Image (cartoon, rainbow, N blue to C red):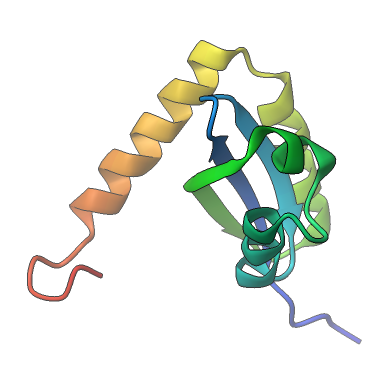
Length: 100
């Protein structure tokens, strides 16, 4: 039986400017948990949720887990570069009419 879930790797910018990287099969729910301080990671409870700065969808759990591990091994400058590329790509594909 195939799973129909998608898995997301994401990076959150915390209120102190640090970054938290995670993965989930329900990005909306997970971000709500981080934002509310209920059910999110201890790190984001302590540092405070600011905004989502990166997300990438994966079809398979293993791929998401591998990407999360790779991102967590990056130095801060490398994470910032990854976030900048994501932001440019996101803007490139947004329609001026509807912002999507």
